[in-house]
Length: 224
Ligand code: GLU
Image (cartoon, rainbow, N blue to C red):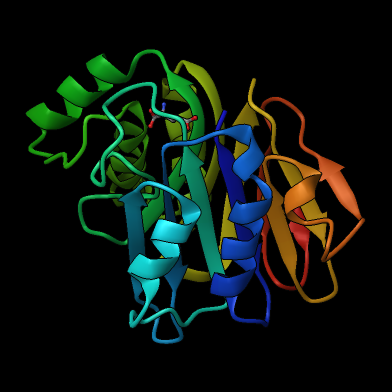
């Protein structure tokens, strides 16, 4: 099991996400990471093998601004536990970041297809394929929600996803199938998480996402 936390709101996302990761440590994991879109619309990913406390050391001195972000603790299924295989995963242009809990069963055929199109991969995970496929479809249709829909129709397996994109600095996208994901609804802020322990100190207003649902979270609300 891994852990997922996401935040969009008016507060600094980083400390909220790190605290959420600590709350999910009991689930077990081998690496941890975080992605943030800062006030100038730049997407940053920070990740490393090891504990959440190792990630905290790694974050020291970095540009951690941003009121939207996603964070992950990984339990490796595809690719050894190392820095490159830790989540979040970037798309090739580094404008999309994605976290995933679950297994993409048809990742190899999708990866081969994308590599034939010239896409370069930086990890051995099944998850990176989804980040790259998402960008592939985004480049086709220029609409992130439509691209997520196209992507989900092509992948087989289990997933809880959290997605942020530099082009949509106010929106966090979530989707799930056969892996748990909840939405925490706050005042001018909203959360996603693998379970309620990660958000309970912020809100008790929780939505349990259904299989096949896609949600768009902004500071102001949640669209399912
Ligand atoms: N299958 C993905 C990986 O190996 C996600 C594992 C997880 O659920 O933490 O990176």
